[in-house]
Length: 372
Image (spheres, rainbow, N blue to C red):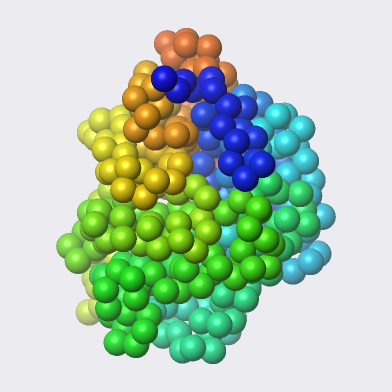
């Protein structure tokens, strides 16, 4: 029976235990996408006990940043700072992976050729006009993901994660709600996955089959017309065939609509609301694991009690990601591994971390006043 303390080795990437720090947006980077001392401090504290650190969404282009202070790997000059970050994480004994992303129509409005890149013109932000991508745009974006992955490898990261969740660009292609294309990139789940598959294959072609590639996917999207679990399983099988090594399974837990000047905008959320129990996303994640046969990372309040340990013990997931709880208490992982969850300083789920980011401010926490 597997346990949180067991190591996991995939494609030569050794994870000393089954706890992961998921990609957490900090907004601590510079306006140019460079690593700062605050970034280093944040990850140094949180890489001391976990087996895997997945560094926050890092943009493959300057016009695809999630927030103004997003990290970037769109140019060679950013490699040195990312090398310092990878070294900090690995020096603490954790495997280091960086998540690659283009926020698409959910991007921070900075301008640029592919600002607002979108499969079908679905809008999320009145400040960003969606750009319906043509074949030239798609080919350019695939190339940019591959080049960013090569820079991550050069910086010393053990692997990369492709962000295909949370209604950012690749997720917008995967979702039937936001992808209404009539060409080869739209239609059924296989067609909607074509862009994601091309990104994965381009990274594998550039870096080789032995360089680990993770993929973050929504298990399902709890919004009418969104991606179903059956869709996610179909897509995950295609990603496995393309060379993905680990699935990092998230969720759209809820979504609301806002109308501005007669146009509706979707406001999706990936964090479970306070009334949702810990581990609510584990059952669909386990179904993906069983259907696809790849190792999976589960997420969703797994820093509470014994949920993470039980989910791994029962082989429902291969790794447990602990996010918001690690913001509130950087020692959470060590205490979970020691079997002392009662000593954890709990996250109060006041969502000030999300609120601060939405306001364009650096990450804040009501519990942990000592960030980063």
